[in-house]
Amino acid sequence: MTTATTPATALKKTPFHQFHLDHGAQMVEYAGWSMPIRYGSIIEEHKFCRASGGFFDVSHMGRLRFSGRHARRFLDRVCTRQIFGMTKGMCRYSLVCNERGGCRDDVLVYCFDEDEYLMVCNAANRDKLMQHFAEQKGDLVFKLEDETEKTAMAAFQGPKVMEVVSSMSREIPNLKRYRFTEKNLMIVKMIVSRTGYTGEDGVEVILGSMTAKLALSLLLKEKKDGSDVVKPIGLGARDSLRLEAGMPLYGHEIDEDTDPLSAGLAFAIKLDKGADDDRIGGFIGQAALQKIAKEGVKRTLVGLKVEGRRSPRQGMKVWKSGSAGDREVGVVTSGCLSPTLDYPIAMAYVPVEMSELGTPLAIDLGSAKAAAEIVKLPFYSALR
Image (cartoon, rainbow, N blue to C red):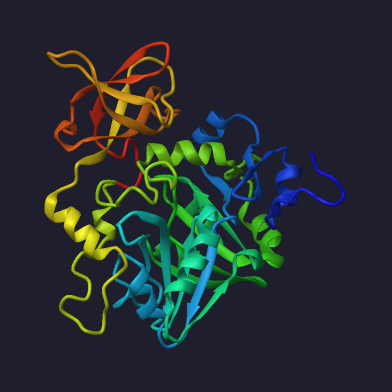
């Protein structure tokens, strides 16, 4: 119970907060922010994104700007992906690791110049990363500014999104994946990247908080017959969309005790960073990941197609049948009844020797076990 002397901590509100209320969103607390979990049916929102387009408020994501003489050098120190060599307009997905090779966070780095970058990180990890970066700065000369609460960020995802965008810009629809541009739309200055977290085509937009509402009104257009092309979508469908796309979520597939090699994220790690160029140093956790790569991972992340209609959930045990009986071999990290595929799916960690496609397993649902089969990730993607 709170009192006048011990008030409850107020949740942060994004620049789109009133929009969510006006559209009947069910609001929930997420990483200290008041966020929409859904506006109506999560399944219908999911399907609408797959069929047409969705607007996602992702302003709770951290936006950290690095600028100055040693900005690039510092980012190469804390990021598993090589930052040296990035040119203006490029985005790179990377991990920030601890010394043991565990994932502090997964991030997206935008290059504006050789001495200016923007990092987008998970909302729950923003404060942790700011502290980590302060501890690692040493004598390097750069400025780190947290721009999260003075900017807004939105994602527009779906097969018809680029039709809407093309009516306002010729350049943006021609962007390659993981590229961005800076645009002025009327009085709205924005950063637009060809990135997303749904398995659909689309863009993510970063802009000033004061102009966010205007930009939203321009982008949420209607067809001539009055039907919506893009509808607002909450965190519930965002989660099922990213799961179908086989994308990791911090706290589920990756965390401080999970290395990115086991999570299938080797593409985002340059294990030999700095080995043949003295302008590039190694990264935190590099030695640990090199050792893991040399010895081989013991467990790996797989996709599971599950029989029945019940949704697997994080923490459920994965079992394997054998001559000696059933034995526990792994654990579910994420699961749902896929709205697109119309059957339950899950991601789980299992021993490498049991990770071949087609391997039969079972998930303990509590009252019963459901048969499952290892299938290829992602479960679904329009970007293949």
